Image (tube, rainbow, N blue to C red; front, side, top):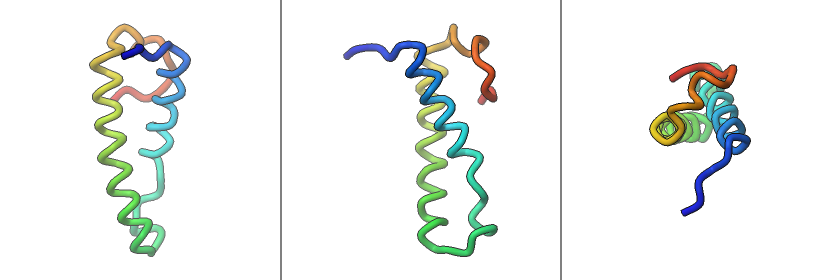
Length: 67
């Protein structure tokens, strides 16, 4: 399995940060949005855990929120 390079790490972390910043479901009254939101948040958490585990040296080298 090939490791992700730093650029891929930054892109993935920005994507996860953007997903985690999505409006909470009570702001948008839509059942499908609520389902998507809950699923996206769970996947985002798993993704951040993976990034933090596999790229520990990069944590302090970007300007994104720390999780």
